[in-house]
Length: 117
Length: 119
Image (cartoon, rainbow over all chains, first blue to last red; front, side, top):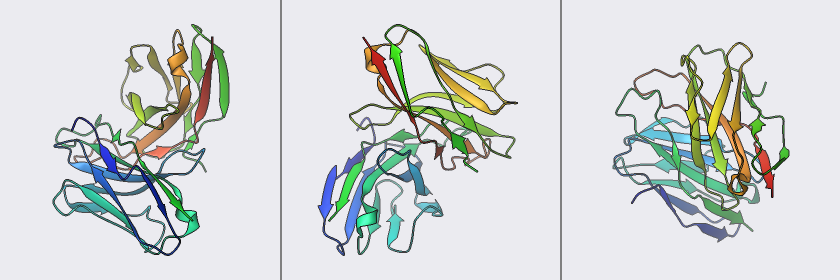
């Protein structure tokens, strides 16, 4: 596709359930990022990958959150035992680092709105 | 300390006027990049403009320009001849550690400015 896609666009779940959020980056993009955006705030970094390698997961709030990108393309962010405070917009972005990387821009997907009841 | 500070929660501007959205940043890195993104009510995040810390010229992209004042650590976005479609949230963001081969580190965002263009 032309841009970053994410699914589902909306997810409503009950507290304690596990959820899996999917990101399909721009074709050929090497780097993939996950962010979380609360209402009225800017996105906050969660984790990122270069190819299939997770480079930085310092932004993951706790061990209920995990992410993978096994084949270096599609990524899944998994939240186990969801809590109400996990409710937010989860955004994925991708960029191309095949060049020098200084001006590589992160292009964002439409996000998944997660609501935990 | 906040890495990115946007002090204007909201702004109202008359159509066709120019508008400046403020952004100040805090970093000890010598090499970094600054970005502006637009988020309309539809929720998407649209990249507008980029400025590298070593770029000598201020970045411009159509009606958007970035007023980069390195000594003051400010990177204000200027929109010329505003249009109704410019109404949106605007986020300033920084990427530290530029210039490394795989230097695509995380973006740190400000809290945003909601811009409303009045007809």
